[in-house]
Length: 186
Image (cartoon, rainbow, N blue to C red; front, top):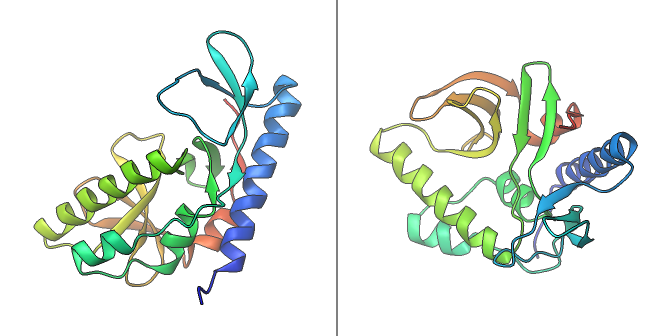
């Protein structure tokens, strides 16, 4: 039986709902994404015009798993990483925290989940090559050289420069970090 970090999943869903509500308050419609027939998603909510579609985050109903990555890399990913990336399909969700602006990265679809897995494998292999503890990215920041990551051993949330050791701890766990985010509508 799969144990879920309920607080993390609920905080992520709550933030996604707040994000959409703030967007609708600002623009009087759902968020927009460029039309791309090569990237279908359950997030799509109809056409706005020939160039853009409406979208909103939706709960993942598929049985997404990181088992292939864990087997290939001989590693167990932190449960928060697995729950975070398998809770919602969504475009990036822009947010603000006391440290600055960021964008939460989430899979758009099953196909995007596969691409995400490939990127995580590349990140883990880079960390191993650099002989650094494994972290798993989950957000990008307004500083293009910095990412937000989860320490795979502890679940702590850190800021790290790509290729460097994490340098600033933001929270003891991902659920706490997400709970304090404020939507930043572009």
